[in-house]
Image 1 (tube, rainbow, N blue to C red):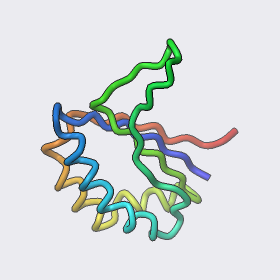
Image 2: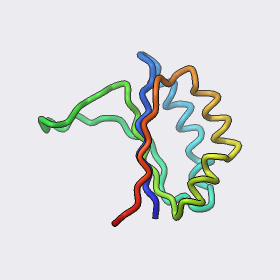
Image 3: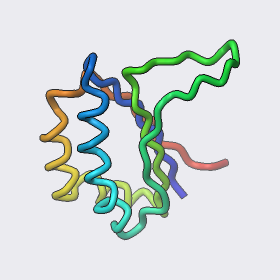
Image 4: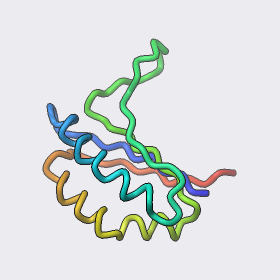
Amino acid sequence: MISVVASITVKEGKREEFLEIFHGNVPKVSNEEGCVEYFPAIDADSGIGVQALDPQVVTVMEKWQNMEALHRHLESAHMLEYRERVKDLVEGVSLKVLRQV
C-alpha cells in the first residue's frame, strides 16, 4: 500500500475555484485501477497549539495499492487535463509518497 500526502498551496482567493475543479475529477480518479482512497481536505481548527493553520493549502490524501498504480494515475489523461485546468490557481505543491513500515 502506498500513501500520498500532497499539500497544494492555492493563490489567494482561489481555493473554492480550485476545489470545484478538483471535486469534478475525484470520480475519475476513484475509478482508476489501484485507487483505494482519494480526497481533498482543508485545515480544521482543533485548538491544538502546535497546529499550523493555512487557509490557502488544500491537502490531498491518497492511497494506492502499489507504486505502479500511482504512476499510472499521474500519467492518466484526466490528470493531465486537471493539471492544465488548475495551473493558474496553484502557487506550489509539496508531495510525500509514503510506505508503511
